[in-house]
Length: 198
Image 1: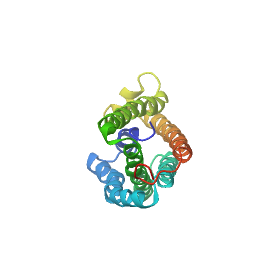
Image 2: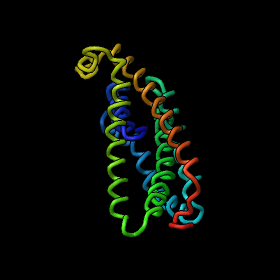
Image 3: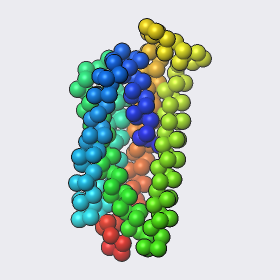
């Protein structure tokens, strides 16, 4: 629930609030998936060697840190702090995703792998939907009635931009709190060495 809305809400923040072009926003946002793509295989190997619990917990803590940094950015920050915050989120997702999936798949027998995979996919999509609904609702709630139209109109509205920036910060702070809950859940679930029975 913490993660999926980051891309959608940050794209709105970068373009409609900060006034950046779509191309610029795309390049800025590349930091998160790039870090995740590069580091996920490394996280998978570390999970196989050392187990998934601490690595997944660290991943959620880093994700919470990255979202907390996004919440503190303000209306028109320099590019580097935005990229750095998104990169921290990407590192956190890399550290969490592969070890967490390995822990789930390694905890069931071979005859249940299909069901476990379906469960993981269902939970992922459910979390994505809830993320957009909850965090998007928090961000939009600061705009008030008709605020989206003011934000989207040509030239924008300084009042609507300020309201969305405030809502974006609240949404990212809420997401950081959800990620901290995820870190706690990951930490207390028990040790897992990445292979069934270990």
